[in-house]
Image 1: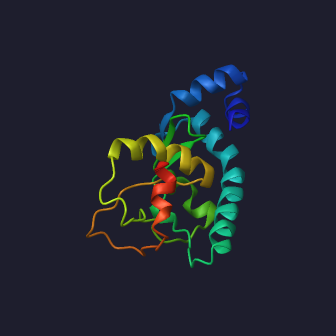
Image 2: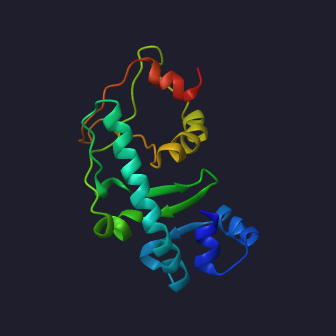
Length: 156
């Protein structure tokens, strides 16, 4: 990711790391430098989507990616966020998928939201998505996981 930022912005890797740590870009208001950054990220995003699809196929889940639900991407778990990413990459990547609903464990009735915010960037940077809490009335396919999954993510 640092190399992509470095090339797109024509800066050193040290400066790219500094940019990444402060990044909170709204692509709908992006300037030319930000557009160059996103254009350099698109090939990597295609690879991530392929890897994610293969990952869920290995677990035997019928899981499809939905471009409408990509609203934010954490870059490398380092705090750089890209807002409204779906408006930029939706047509280029042609992603189709269902919502990722947080798994529920009988062993963990309620979870510490601060712990979720702390752990989700680490977990999601490994699978290339974002963990978000959805309200009960929101529609979407719920994925059933074994009860130990949630505890495994939180390290409990």
